[in-house]
Length: 379
Image (cartoon, rainbow, N blue to C red; front, side, top):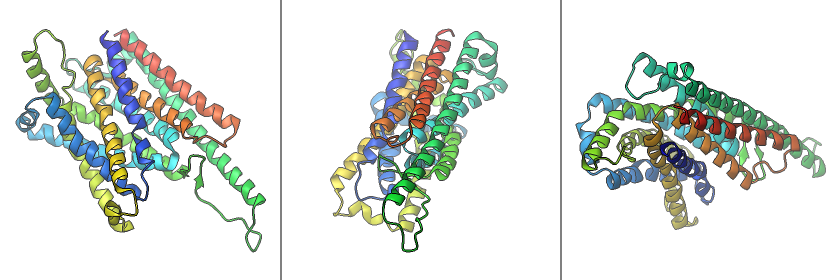
């Protein structure tokens, strides 16, 4: 029953994460950096301590009692993860919700699952899965098979992205032939393309950002490990107050507060630099834009973003913060994001072969989720 609940919690968290960018797409009249940091204030500064306050009485006392080493390492992982989160937003901007999320979160799932397992192989800790467990047991090999399928799914989705880029170029050339041609009969060169969802599509730039984001976003998983002693303290306090009721579902909420301080620092600095460079500080008070609606949309997007980790913590408490939890969580996000990509018509106007390729990639990732679930049930 615990495994089933864990999968359900991870799915809810995956749905929240795969959907959080949708409100941002409705923001009008603001630059990217403006709506990103307003939403981020809810994601990283407002909602996390509120969630901790509601679920862990005295959570600040736990943080204050933690060693400087634990807090420093957890905060550092948050800083690095913040770069991953920042480039996630840019990757989705240039690749679209479906393709960008598939590549970024697929890479994140690989690094987030394997690096902690390698670390605990050389620094054993009770209750933590090691790379030896993954390769030396039947359940571990099954989980690794799911991870391999996830990687294959990423490759297929990346291939679909390249095919989409070629299809968009071809469509633009056809339109240029049908419409008026320049004064000298030359077609204007275009470096970016607009897909059917109205989003700017820049494959090379988007892929570079996606790779950076995928690698650094895995630091959130490392941050949870670094701050695990705070979660253990929260768990012990709750179990003493509620004997015989199992593990504490919300124990990781206190860790999220510290990690997200790091994420806020990175994103705030960069967005302020962009505001200054693009002269977009006026967005926050621009009465020509729907200010109240924009702020509410950003608040919704930021809150939805945090909920992914709120429910990840619940799923982790049922399944453990090992490869299984991380892969399941990331894979569910990829599936939901791809579903939104279809709803937004990000793949409209591409060839049937391209559409088939992205569907195969999605189904491959879905298969990886099922196999990881089976492997975890064998544990």
